[in-house]
Amino acid sequence: MTRPTPSGLLRLPFADASPTQRAVQHPSATPAPAPLSAFAELGLDAALLRAVAEAGYETPSPIQARCIPPLLAGRDLLGLAQTGTGKTAAFALPIIQRLVRNPRQAPPKHCRVLILTPTRELAAQILESFRKYGRHTKLTSAVIFGGVGFQHQIDALKRGVDVLVATPGRLLDLKDRGALRLDGIEVFVLDEADRMLDMGFAPAVRKVVEFIPQKRHTLLFSATMPDTITRLADSLLTNPEKVAVTPVSSTAEKVEQHLCLVNQPDKKHLLLHILQEHPEGLVIIFMKMKHQCNKLADFLIANGHPANAIHGNKSQGARERALAEFKTGKARILVATDIAARGIDVKGVELVVNYELPDEPEAYVHRIGRTARAGASGKAIAFCAPDERANLRDIERTIKQPIPVVAEHPFKIGGKDANRQPTGEAKHPYEQPHKAGTPKVAFNFRQRRNRGR
Image (cartoon, rainbow, N blue to C red; front, side):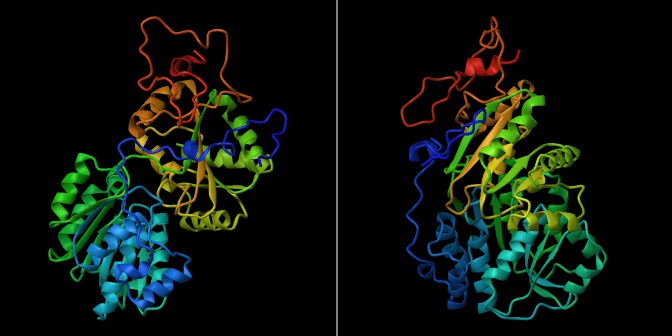
């Protein structure tokens, strides 16, 4: 049963989409093995099974089913998986079991497990997961990242911890201050490795690797596998188990993707229409520039939509407050830069809006990966202004499928010359007839490229 659409509002074909339309499988995907019937079959200890059950999980996700057994056996691992696949539990559970079965006190200023991650939000999220799964153990854990004072983090490390989650810069700062030693690490995890390198952390990662023991258990996880990650994996891992549960650079199966062609000045008005059409559920809106996030959040608030902005210029306290209000629904809209594209794991995100298309096509994959997590479904709408067509082409080449266009909305690009094909212009690389079982694209791609010229 679909809700009546108020006159003049954008009606997107979300509610009426068929299951086939809602799950567009990447053509190169290979069927994942059937998940195990229960976590008990993975060989996890009773304390972990109890914590998993209390967290509400009954069946392992594909990456959990494929990663946990080799990790329990002590194998190095290269994991290729997009966000929202249950990756954190896939490495947290076997690491906790390893520590519990081999109990020893970490010396002062030492840690037994080091997990490197690119952003503060992702670091805090991973720490929360370790504490959730290890709640029935006596393991200690801590997180360190920049943007906050040093003293609290120095105090947390004085007695030593079992698990340390860190961003590279602050980790090296604390080591240089003599507050942390890295020569006792048993397990090293490099999470979101591709994002780590994209953010310029490659020199810091190499420096960290110089300080940790050569004899260690190493895990590397990445959503994409460019040549730089291949070389990094070859240098860090020894005879690793390779697990790839989804196609590299693919989009989440259960995300309904839609494209709205709109002139830049009309984007904010179109956004208001979409929010009126979707009055419930959490919404993340992605932009490029930090100051524009603040302006858009203020615009939404002025129009009756509680919203917060999150980006790198915000203090850690402000970022934590924004996330807390978002998670509780006090401000159901979060306007974010790509700093949130991988570091936010919040239940109930039903809609992601790409207000501006990213310059890096892989960022689109991670942005829309904030919805449809842990088996849920979600919706993603991309706004494309005429000057963003090149970004759109790059995104569609990366995900190897066209994004279905919303044919009618109040601010669609039009004009008498909108459908004219300039002489000598090549067709869109994914222009093709509509096929049964795929979302119908309302505009052909030739029209899409030239609207608004």
